Length: 277
Image 1 (cartoon, rainbow, N blue to C red):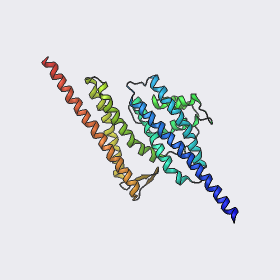
Image 2: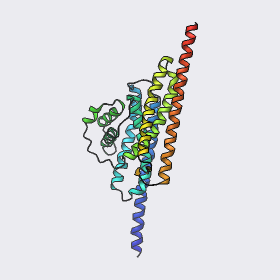
Image 3: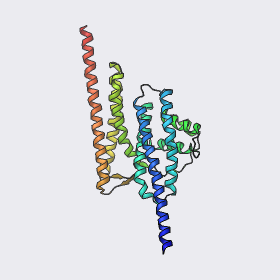
Image 4: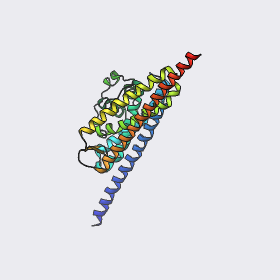
């Protein structure tokens, strides 16, 4: 009888150790994704300059190591259900970082398919405890400079088990918040004649994305996302999270719209003053 409990205890300890390792790695993915977002918020010119690129690459490299470890652990895990929530949260932060950097560099939305290839490239760059710098560079350039040829040259036959379309969908809501912050904080760095173009470009992107999201949710009114999984039946917790994210998206869009109006009004006032002078 004792041997049964000893065996069960050993099994539980093994599962707990696995869970703690995944949690630590996910915390790192979240933390370094936030650093990439912070780097993106300070970008003042495109194409993204070498100094900004190096800063992003440093954090990108650490994420690649942790991502490969989490993906491998999840594939082999016997407790996928209990790990999914922790992993989904970290993946949403990573998706927010990748889509934001891609938007800053290319002024368009990073597609789900291309994002998956970039993430597979990050995992492929992992060689154990080290990173293959050449492969990592190709994955990062595909994200920063939209260089598809870079990834085409990399063999990315990798099973990506930790990210799916629901993660991407939820990450897009967070992306719009970063675009709003990027718009407002960078307005002061542009001369008035360029303000309206910069703000209008971001506003147009966010407005179009908001319309697409609303259309999608109207088509599936019972849709919810919880722990990285779709559900089309009534799920109070998942539906609540989705409603809150949509409301924050709407608020971000409204803030950018107000900024655009302020820029246009300020521009007219400056033109009037020039006429008077």
